[in-house]
Image (cartoon, rainbow, N blue to C red; front, side, top):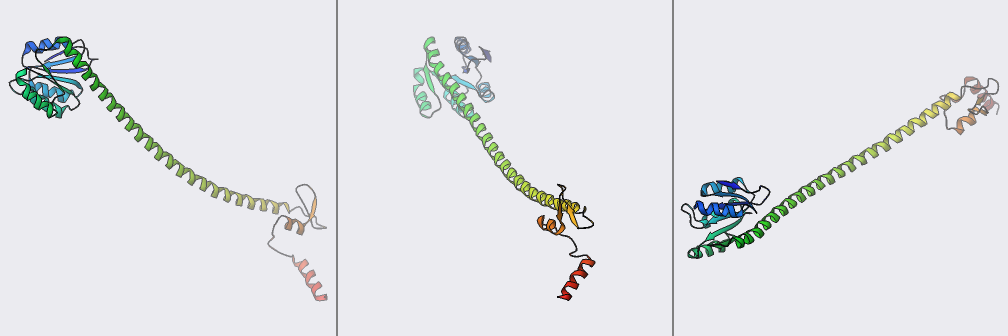
Length: 243
């Protein structure tokens, strides 16, 4: 097997049982392509499977094990994106027409070929293959981006649900805090009732003014655990008795 030419160039597989023809083609195409050349059809099939990025496979029609049309028919299954070129004489034209009609080959080139014309024919075919590969890569990347976008959208919706739940819980906590704060304020106000005048019974407020204890409690919606002390209760009962 011969491998020559720049690895940066499109890959081309040449198959021909005549070594002289094989070497001649490889030397002719080495400047424009990365060449793999073999006289063994079995090795050619292995290369097509292991190097699925061949832009072209060029095969002679008349070979002892498989004909070129048969080899290219197998190549159409193992490496469907690879363009298939058949080299043939006029005597094989019927087999060539059948291979073309069945989609086994991309193009056929009759012997003898003109070197310049051969390169002019092969270059556009290789370029189309490169564009096909690039388009498929772009489509694959686009599919990945779409999948990533869908995942991101799902994550955003999930975060929105979590945010809604957190906001609801915050509202509940806020209401509970306000209730506790109100209760604490009531307790604090009750504590402020402690400075009471022993004579008149007025309550000293936070601004150092004095208010009637009943009015203060009503004003601030405060409640005591007992309505009247025993002495005041007796006085109130005696007033009812007199009336």
